[in-house]
Image 1 (cartoon, rainbow, N blue to C red):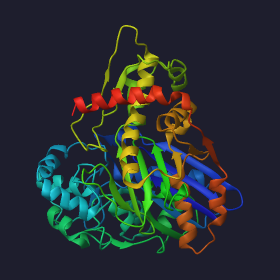
Image 2: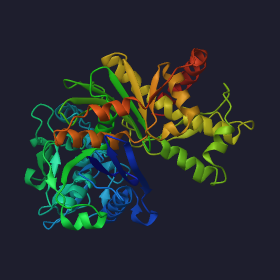
Image 3: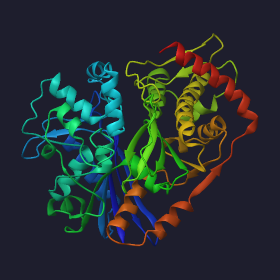
Image 4: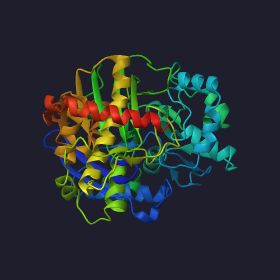
Length: 474
């Protein structure tokens, strides 16, 4: 059986074909064109076109038996009653709602209540609060609109069905963690009704692929399509990390740490969040806004695209005098959730080289991850295993730095698209197929990276300096 997994990520269209005999037999990743992106938004229909084109390329000359969809937890698009987009898709990088949500968070009692109800602190990255801003401050009339994310819009285009999953909506601040249904207080705050959101279903439900989308991709119409699930939850699924004691760390455009639990687990300082898994288990976690987006900024804006990533990496020096970098070019999520926090280099001297600056960016990103790791482990204890995915795996140096900074063994997959594999697993479950083969395939691709104990003191000293500067610049 060939499963086609389609993903509308924050920055690119992805498609993968998986079958139990040969594993991954086709994978395509295509960055979105620059002309469809603008200030934290993307053209909703152009993204669909890009994803379907990726699906066409990945499935060329293959008979596809089912389609699974991956989206993002944090996207938002507003459509009219005929499901024509009224707005572009707002991603988590949209900064326009920051001041509005800061006003909400001044009410600490309300913020704590919403955090305990939904697992999400009031914050501009969450689609519920982003929509609140668009309605209350931008005066957008959504009284006759349908509200959804890019992934569920893709599902609608493929099937004609307006369906959401509680797993997806929990990462937007919409789901009550006790009832596992839409949170009535959130709906009231935003000013919409539940029928403006998609009906809640799960991966066990699937719908036939329509003729139009099938013809675009060159595959058979009528095959089952599994509703959209978020990349973060599918990353957890694809890493075989839905059991207690297993942590995943994903370092891509942004970064996230996730831990699966059987119950809601939240802190009083908002440093962590709690969403739902596809099986309605609870994924507690923490997220950082600055990861490879900071690296891309440095390569493009500071190094003026004159150096490749490998050339920059070759210039790295592990020096106690290296600058410290606070990776908040795109604001802060965990642990402080400070939208206005800014990034920067500290302790630059005339001896500082381009390679030293590059090193400090890699380190600063991982120190922000270590902050989140400390918050999670303080609440739940050290994990039995840590599984790593994302763009970090393209660099052996950076991967080793992560193991050394945490002083923990990490397991890295030779397959860098865990979320797509998670989509394939959900397709197997939805269709009643045995998932053991794909699970064994994924586990066979893992390689352990061990920490170097000789680096422990070096990184502890530098981390203490990072924390000092972090607290100094609140």
